[in-house]
Length: 341
Image (cartoon, rainbow, N blue to C red; front, side, top):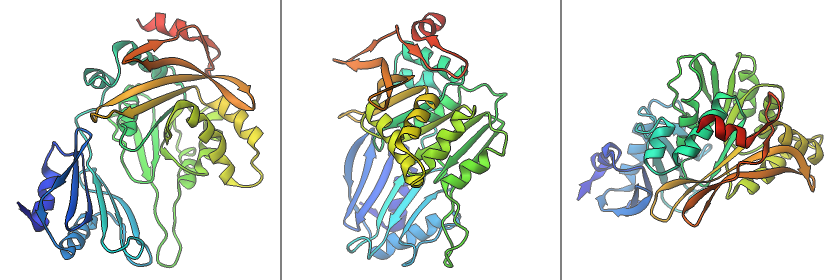
């Protein structure tokens, strides 16, 4: 049996564990290869609090009654989230999503069955051509891992600026800058939001603008940036490609009453080129479920999406006869397939 803080640290050092979460001192769980397991550790509430304090020591993030949530990056790149009473009922709720260093290239995802060679070559072509890409999926489906792999296919001469709530994107490119949000102080001052970061990123000569997680009104700033000629990528929580389009058309409305649905739909159709949807299967494996392209047209006041790749009956099926809406002019998808196969 593992005991106390040393036992919790042992879980973080275990390379087979992807995530650790604590619901109470008696209910501790980990995820290995996408499967959840209960762990037998003897700890107290004081152990949990002291452990969190140690983890937060180098993060410059605070946790108290006035700020009962914290989202922070640990020294090793892992992501920590904590919620405390009275937001939670009785105990501190702790999640540590461990940073996975092992996967950084699309060819590695191919080896793990996340995609096949045909899809890898298509995605490489989309990245090298500067298409605007949105990756969607549920929690733990591998969105950030796929985003990392796509970014590491970008030409090393290009300058990449990333904006995130908490640092998760890991780049190999020498010309890159990573920025994260900052909560307000006790006096309610100094908050830096994703909207702030995107606006500042545009002043930093980006050749690729990346938003780690689109959740709210920052989606409008991202769309406007992409529509003005800045190639970019982003991730988004959704259950399908078509739901992603709907969210991209509704989230910008949170920016204010002057933003109309018609304007947003037209901007999404003109700005986004490719949508990739990833899922986590019942056995814990991640997989690309579908890849879609926006044609630039509106159907029933929503951007038209055509399917390039779709998982059907355990096999990827491709549809190569459709036109992609690209910044450098229209091109047929089947021409991309022929150029990379």
